[in-house]
Amino acid sequence: MRLLPFLLLLLSSCSQRIYIVRHAEKVAAGPNMNTDVPLSVPGQQRAEDLMNRLKDKKISLVYSTQTVRTVSTATPTADHFGVAIELYGPRPDSAFIATLLSHKKNLLVVGHSNTVDDIVNMLCGTTQMAGDLGDKEYDNLFEVKVKGRKKIFVRHKFGAKSE
Image (cartoon, rainbow, N blue to C red; front, side, top):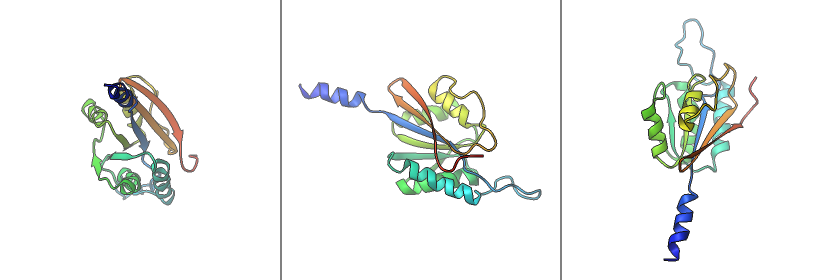
């Protein structure tokens, strides 16, 4: 019976971390181009920087919308951890948020400038981000640490500084 308090303490200290990013820099769409454009060279570097930032975080699942730029941003991290990229969206809803929270594992979610705030706020259950990211904001890495019912929001920077 002495083991029981130790196990309860160990289980109560477990937490989940959900990392949320906007896709990396993309190629500018020309007048006759599809709007689903790939990453630019700086965007490809930022995707690698993201993987390097998360390489010791034991990511178990990676989620991305189905655009080329989000999948390309997620790929280096997914490859590093040997996990498939699960597609969602394009907009997060309460079912998607419930799915993220149900995993109890560390996750990466790659979204867009107009959805990252929704994901963070829905995960936290409170407004942590007042609005969409700016058009040139790419260096934010948002973390929601879930420990029981408690949620802690942290904003990190990674890669080259955005303009």
